[in-house]
Length: 338
Image 1: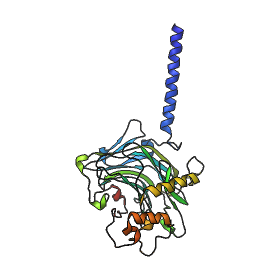
Image 2 (image 1 turned 60 degrees about the horizontal axis):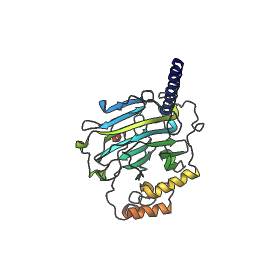
Image 3 (image 1 turned 180 degrees about the vertical axis):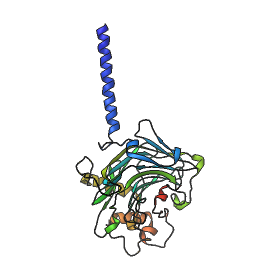
Image 4 (image 1 turned 120 degrees about the vertical axis):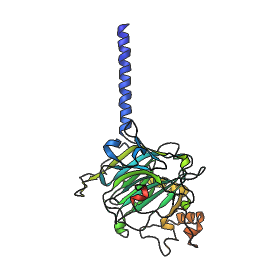
């Protein structure tokens, strides 16, 4: 009996050990099989005092917005190219004027000629969906390269993965590993293609002046605090010496991350854009009356769909105030100055 009890205990020990190994592995890698960066090892508190809370697992962070302040964090290292990702769960209920951002920028180092790659989540009034916006800035360009989309899920119900791939030749934005936007570097784009080392940021802030219907609906703090949850933070890129501005030797192509859009992914991207794209700067004839920016490749089917969606903006009719105005090109626009 004693021997049987000891064997039973050992079996339970092995089960617990196996479960621990499995759980540790699950926390150690993200959905792409890439290592997850524990918050304290990869990031630093940026602003917001107690409105940033690191959870016990060390891999999850809550950012909150209240009437006093928003909050945010920033990567400890600078990166030149790589794959950067976070699983995010957005605030629910009434979120008008609330902006959650996951982005890359070097505006703190290059004030007049900064680069930037954005995921911005634009809140809305109750009963209407969150909207997602991507944007690209290079070399302090005054041209905002915004695109806006709907989503096929409620981003406030559960975590979903948002990723940015940045290489020397192209940029891809992913939602749950589905590419939703691709920007290829062209000679015509010149310095407008981001090319300087950037940090990775996550913020929540009050965008009442522009985020929802051009500022018509503002943040209502009776619903505060607004909490955005971040987990599975992936920093997979070439780190850069902040003093010498030189990149350590690395090759992001020698890993499991995708560096091109496959044929199957392209079909999914085309399907997504057909169903969910609501704005693209390339087709905005109120902003670019004579011709779109030179890097734009016009898709006739996409142009026609957007024209039907908004004939004034995409058909070149009389100018009207657009639903989401161009925001400031500084980190203050991401809430750092709140």
